[in-house]
Image 1 (cartoon, rainbow, N blue to C red):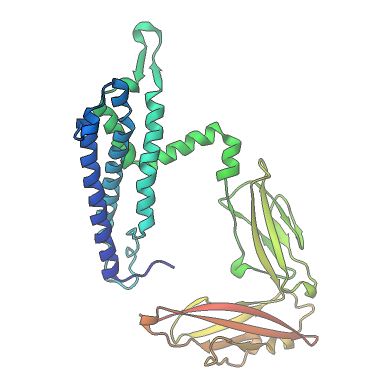
Image 2: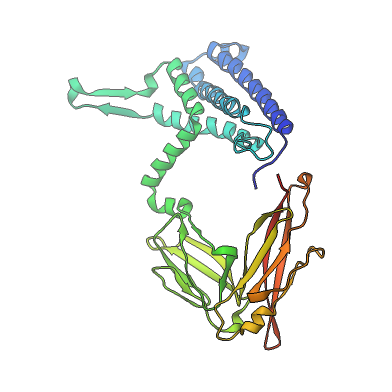
Length: 357
């Protein structure tokens, strides 16, 4: 669920972050000028060119931090006006209010900048052919001002720098990249439940060429089509669905689903006071009779005040409890119990009750 802090809280946090970033900006500007123009006594005592050149990475760090702080300040300025007075407005959470994101951005920017700058000053790029037409770009010969400008740009576009390094690493170290970064998720079925005797096709997110396996039931390895067993003894059993990259089997994704005789179908988010209709679904009508389905017992273990209407044709109805706006919302767990051959089978559904506007 999105962060729903009050308008005043979000604006206070934005102001605090703005002041903090302005302090970092001011300190970095002063330190950069101090290093560049030797404000501090110990710098004026450096005698050799090598000693003075050793201060270059320090200049890159401060220039990068200046660029990063300007970027972060622009983020606050861009989204500050979107912190509006709506209870759940569309733009309410565009503002990045979590402090650690700002800290991590300020840490990553100078580190990436120094690494890239070291690569650049030790790199010579030849453009063209022949002695007369050939052009050599030697970053180590650039003036201090140019290098500081490049460091500033790398800091301001820190996220772009990271993406470019990702692309380089992906092409240079293809297999290692696959092991470390080429992840995917196995998409779960609704409620994480598969009915006994059900056929369900699993997919990955993003769509990836994988080999599928399951420890219970049958699975088509190439298509991800899973067929659940039809034995009632498997009710409540957990099934591990596994997908492995075809080209790199060591890269895998796992998800656990539950096998159930039946499941509850209905809205999972309603408004306070709404009439809620629920029904049950099963594929085992060859073993479970209609009378057993109609005799299902409904209850809400967490809210004894909820009563259910008689359930004709496997359907029941209840009225969602009243929820105040100050409470934000309430979760109600509905449970249905079916008795077959004197053995109880149950299913649950969690419903979120929101206050009326």
